Amino acid sequence: MTSPNRILQGETLDQSIPQKRRSIWSSSHSLCCLLFCSLCASRQGPVLVEDNIITLPISRRFNFTGTGNIVQNDLARINAVRSRSAAKKGLASRAVISEPVDNQVVSYIASVGVGSPATTYDLIVDTGSSNTWVGAGKSYVVTSTSTKSTQSVSVSYGSGSFSGTEYTDQVTLASGLVIPKQSIGVASTSTGFDGVDGIFGSPSTLIPTVTDNLFSQGTITSDLIGISFEPTTSEDDPNGSIAFGGTDSTKFTGSISFTAVTSTSPATDYWGINQSVTYGTTSILATTAGIVDTGTTLIYLATNGFTKYKSATGANLNFVIGGVTYALTPNAQIWPRSLNTAIGGSASSIYLVVADWGSNSGQGLDFINGYAFLERFYSVFDTANKRVGLATTPFTTATTN
Image 1: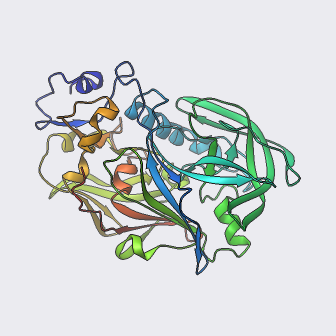
Image 2: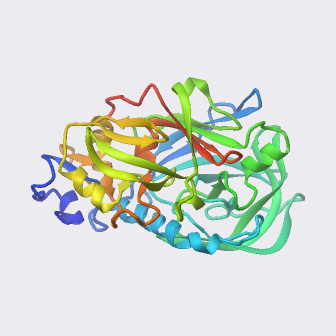
């Protein structure tokens, strides 16, 4: 296969790859600005609280302040997830531990208030991280609601680091919607988080997150989040939402199908599921374990699966999860062509959003369904029932790309 750097520089492709179908690879030298497609809490629309569901509008944006390689950053993040899984075992439910996350290409970002009066922080909402922490961009402000603990907290990721101290403080998601005594980390040092202030922890079994506390206090009636966003060709587009405590029926079609979190390690320690993958009628990957991850940009398959995939063309890429098939059309398998130049590519080329995980299946984490998958399907992360839900949307078969 042609080397990653040469592919994005527009040189000759390996003939095993169909004409003009390329994985999204980038050279750290030629890609002078990292594509950072993020979903951030829109400050234009109100928070909707209806039937014990809290809905925050989110949008996608680009951050051109960083540098890096999309695939390299994605794999650094997931390798950290995999390698640190064993360290989590046996920890107390309230332990503050090192979490593998990465500030990279695609993330959900929410504007969250901390303290009283509240200071607003832009935080990455990440289903691969449990801890909520602040201070990467904007310093933490101590107020009357701040209580410092003796616990330390740290985050390690592919291109930087964070360390600090645990506090409990008041967290505000919107005017009048307050979560008291929420555990947060306060950064004393951090690197690699350009344009954001930290992490907003998602549902987890490790420590009580904001969603957990909303549930325990009776503000929401279900301990889950539902996530929606749409494929787009714009650099800045308010195209999604995150719902705390329920699902938004206007964002999906048909019904949500749930599958239990896998028991296979290390995928079981995150939002891990079992799935098989076919390309048309050809088996690409037998049933195996992997994760659904909002913090990973692309879709990753174990090497043996990707090898079969890269020589195929013209069919749907099918993910069979819990007996239900979720099909990515050929259009959904490519990067938006209008944004090719944003990742250092050629405007006339076609780049795949499916990439090689780097090892054969059988490792306990053999695929990652990242942003490129989730923008075509509504996703639900149900902590109480330890399951993941998926549904089609009006944009599942869109020809946006």
